[in-house]
Image (cartoon, rainbow, N blue to C red; front, side, top):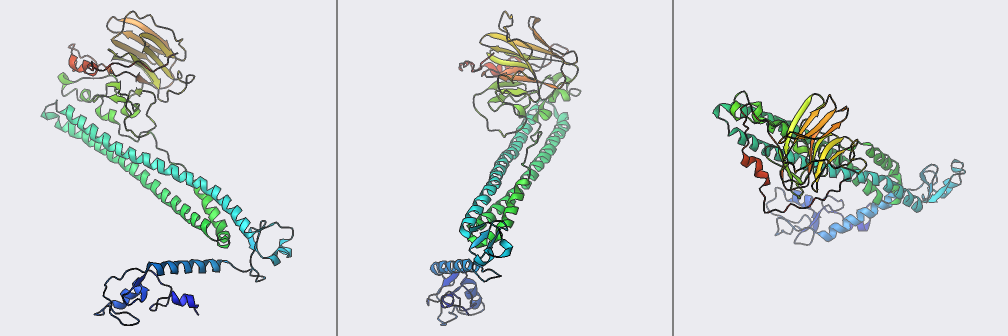
Length: 489
């Protein structure tokens, strides 16, 4: 039979502890669901006890009574958790450290626990709480990491859409230069772009959804464990083994990794676009031997629309983290070379701080000792030209005048990388090295003036770039070119 206090906290309709109690105008309280059920089908809203008609269709909640009921239920649960010893009907005041279970004082002196170590229940609970907290910390750290990765993946998914919009715009602008009969070619390329967007967006969506499920599972584990940590000592110790096992199993999940190639391959869609339709519009084509890869560009570099020019803007662009992106003001060509001979010209113009050459895909600017591995370049800074590689001494090259263009010739099979001045046909420097992996054209600059990859001249001696277009990146006369912050060796 319920105690007096329990009767006071019981609804007269369901005879159970109030759930979400509401207060009628007659001062009687009932469970919200009970009174709504009572009123259902009745012409008036009368009190189930005194039959007084309530003047409110939606009576207010009785928050004071609700708080009393919740406190009563919590106290009753805690009283119920203080179990007695099933063998001796004594209170479980001790905790056997060897059997990892609560015991009474009679159990302590029994043969079952001979030679065992004991601790007061409150001390054992505190020690085990600390142990579980340490284990939980690993799970909490992993949850934080997962959320950070999800944030970057979400940004990557948005950037994919931005890339798609930007690339589509460029494709359309280039196709405007062609006549109507190229419409089918335009549609084919946009379809390919859309398919890649759909594929890569779907991949990112699947990754994000999978990660969300992991985060949800981890969050639920953390929530349940935190609730168990807040429980009373006896209830906590009863559930401790299961909680510890559950928390220990969760950190076994692998940390998510964003694989290479997640972003839209802009270079594939935009690079050499007119050359690829050369058979249809020979007189309008312009072929660039190297196309810059935006997915590798440092966030403070700006690539021009045709992906053949780059300059430093000294502002960090909002770009997602991806494995291909280079550090320290660098960008790679979109295609690498692992055989044959290749050549490209770069217009340096008024740029006063640059590196030009080739590097392996894994090259990164890190420390002074590591920088020269997997890279072969010529550097121009403070009016001096120097070779830059692991095998070359940092000596000043005998260049008599400031160069406007640099020609780079790669003979991969012959193991030679040659730099020359195409304007005077003068040799500058040659690296000799037996290449054993694919190398990519590398461009590094900390100057506001652009480095421009020049197009290949057609048979009639003309190319598609006018002088105005070629010099357009260097017309910022009002901008004072800041002194380079590079330290060379």
